[in-house]
Image (tube, rainbow, N blue to C red):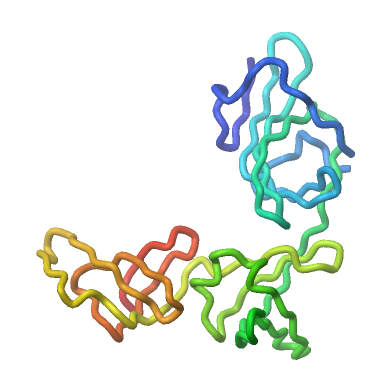
Length: 208
């Protein structure tokens, strides 16, 4: 059995899987980050596995995430079939302010505003700071998601003053940031200091 993987392992394969029949990008071209349209919705490929068994037709096992509702599923496609590529594109907008339950982003070229409802934005808003440039993702002229910068510079507004420890041993303490997010920081970091945070993992990177 020949396998080309983009994360999934052969242990995830089971007999009797249903194959999804779909339609314009070849399934052989699937890779991590590809945007495809399945069942009338846009999906992003998170993982893939090309498999050519000793007997039977080759196929591609994928793990995909729905851009709209965030759900993640596994789908399997026959090798060589065509798949409709989702026309998802990005535009950079600056987060300018929050208006009630809406987050307002502005195109700095046209000054056109785009409003996103808090309920549609998930927990990524805890890293969102006014003046931050983000990527808004569009599909069929609608915003379906937004991407934060990979790193964010945020100010510490509160730490537990009662925590003590040996800084040489790498101890940490929880710190509240200006956006309300809480991250673990080294013991030597104090209120009022700016730190860099990895928005993908929510982890402390360094002092600024």
